[in-house]
Length: 116
Image (cartoon, rainbow, N blue to C red; front, side):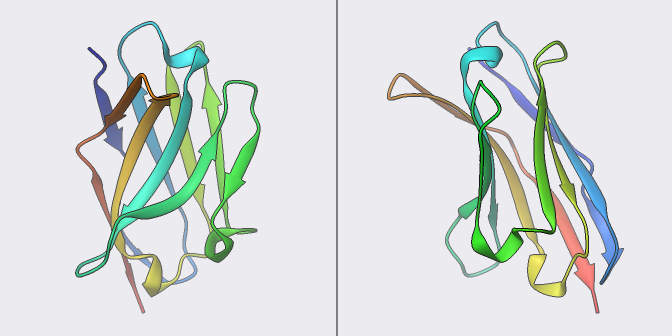
């Protein structure tokens, strides 16, 4: 069983920065694809960014150039550095661990609120 624990959310003014962290339990972190997703009120959960076991990254167009995903396999942790935050980035951010069709785990989510 894998557990994902997010941290780092909070309230920030537009233009500010936040760094989210997601710590994973278990022994499969280093071979899994890790991702960040977000869900705003009344909207579906959508992709923010993913990073493969080899460090290849993928971003949603709306966050490209502002957000950076990274991982530390020694610490079983994935990060999301968010810069130049906008009010429309306000959402609950979820960490995801995926291993093909075999495994798919979600964290409990962390709230990010960006004030204008």
